[in-house]
Image (cartoon, rainbow, N blue to C red; front, top):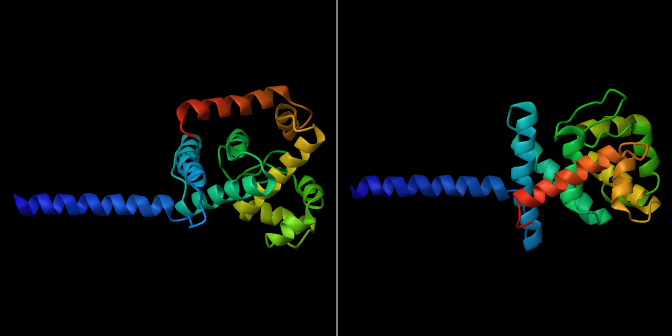
Length: 201
């Protein structure tokens, strides 16, 4: 009886440790409590939205790349990670796809639009290790590097916010082109859903 109980406790501890390591393996000592909250939320939200859309699990290394991309872009451009996540979810459900008009990756950016935005923030991209600004390189990188894709998409959103005097609703509407009010409402609705489903964020 005691042996069985010890085995059950050991299995329970191993399972807990495995879960903890997989959940927080991409965290570091500089993470604040708020960072940990966002990363924990994003782990659940990104993986669940991807699974609903694709019917399969997102590979852990790709999941962590997306989460790190959202967190880094959020800090770089001072935009809420919830807004970035809501746009990615609206655009692609966290799938790495090519759109029907040549939009690339998670945040669905055309390479020419990406270059236009990157040229506005060259130092930010150089400091992040991205120093090739040719359209061909940008197009390839947008598809193979989630963190780059999210950084460029967030830079574009920041540019739109600057153009619309920090009006998030207008900026989000223009993210999809043409001041699309329906698109803006979809993104805002996703943020509202997140707030209800994850009230501690």
